[in-house]
Amino acid sequence: MPHEKYLNEFCDIIDTYGGRDKVMKALCYGAKLIAGYYADRQPELAKRYAIASSRISGARATLRLIDDIPMIQYALEYGLGGGESDSIMAVLGVTANVVDLLYYPVEKICWLAEHKIVDVKNADFWDNVNTVFWVVGVYLNLMRNIRSFGLNQQKINRLKTPSPSSNDPDMEKTLKKHRLDMLTLVRLTLDFLHAGSYLPKGYLWGGKLSTMQIGAVGTASAAIGIYQIFAKRRLNK
Image (cartoon, rainbow, N blue to C red; front, side, top):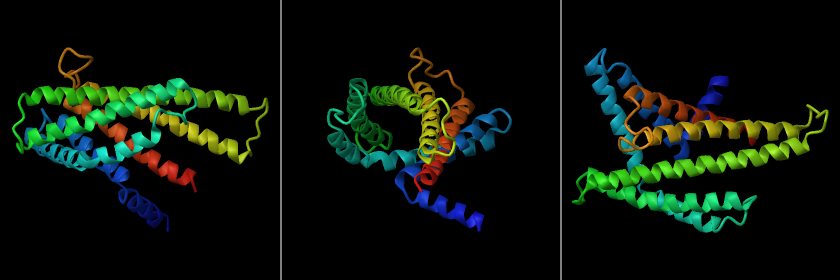
């Protein structure tokens, strides 16, 4: 039955770390969106949703404590980006990997300070450093995907004939993947907007988004991410 098929697909997705994190992200920012909406209307209800959002966010942060291990493996396999299509992609890829490798240890320091496991002097400083690495990492991934999208668009334009056959399965699959890549650009743009809002006031748009706006941006990004997981699974079948 159709509903069983979707249920099985959803269960398969949340059995993976990435899929479960996307769902938790949607719940986290969905709760933040509701908290922001009811902030002035029903403060008590808003407080409950804000607490739920904070707890889910904390759970996601805890699960990221060992993300640096697969990140190190990925960075070693990526090397200097010899497999990339051009030198710009390689430079962006290597730089993004370096930033991510720096981000995870700093996030651990912030996590230890937040839970008062160790006494960290100037915890706000480390929190700001963590946010800067987050913003820079998202920005580099966005630039990398913009470059990749442009290169792929050029390839598609070269492959197309004056009257491309609509029945060509390879071309149809390539175009579907290209549309998914476009969604990735939208998602990363939302992530960059979201990350920048956590910078200290005076830097970019730090502190200028309301709770409801942050919740809306985070929820939209998570929804796109979940859709992409479903779409990629079907595309690869």
